[in-house]
Picture 1 (cartoon, one colour):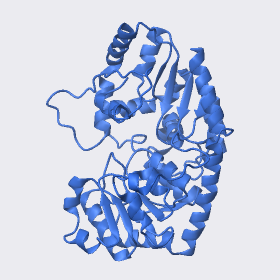
Picture 2 (cartoon, one colour):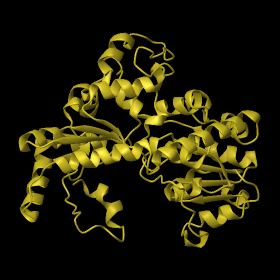
Picture 3 (cartoon, one colour):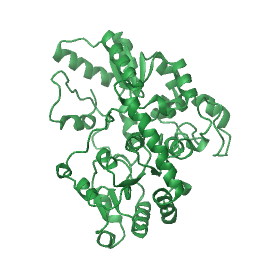
Picture 4 (cartoon, one colour):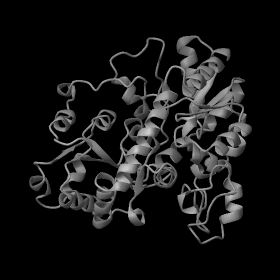
Length: 414
């Protein structure tokens, strides 16, 4: 059950199990309303629709299938699901899609505000939170410490309530690997929740499947990568599907790629190509390729790719780790800064762009560091070690598989 936009990726799949049905509920966006650029606006509007919106969808599903609801599984921040679960007297299982460190940060919002609200030093350590010894105030999701006088959004208020809401869930599920998180954080979260389960990143499998034949890739990315001469030489650039850098930063990326001389593959939406420097596409056609959307898992798994310039979303970081590709990080919002800190300072498998925004010289320096210099070789060694850890965890006997089995058992007992 969800909004139409969330169903679309599944409806295009050729084989949907017959026991899975999709029910669409309102997205909360009123007719005629023009959405702004920030993705959180859409979330706020959906949450404002409240538990009645969810209940209508459930009533429709029950009426059509003649089956009772025995368990509700939802995004953790969709707390109206808990209201409906209580009304139906069924368990609630919460799924946390971002990185697990951000969940811990929201659990400790009150403590962070108490200690840091009047601290103007963005570099203040957060070592009073279990597992956060390397984190700094500047790494926190933006809604944990609000500017004085700034009104909190509904989404911000819900995130701040995670510490009281989620202990009521039968289980809290994260799609990551326990082996990647600080032990103290894991210990702390497990002490606060009924079941805290790391079910792994579901696109990772062990043994690693072979890449599909290049001629089956309609984007042409794999066949283009096949033609690159050197292993681990290509710069892959993608900032995800939700946000994009501002136009002046896209110009900077183009200028740095052109001057670097490295071959590059850039996933860039068609409507953004108009901001690129005049003549850029023609001048780089021999060693660069731009597509509207690249098959990211397959691209990262190709041996020609040597570095991933990313927004540092948790999915992208896990995909990069599972493929053994070091990163250059330009975080935007949410858990991105925390992921960037882990990539650069904890795991040492990449580097964040200087000053937090893209500039030509800074990006050039980062690309050369990862692809050419000794420090980059060390990053590659580190991420290959992490790749082995993640693939072992994703295997049939790994911790993620055991937690997934526990989750299935909890659902079956409902």
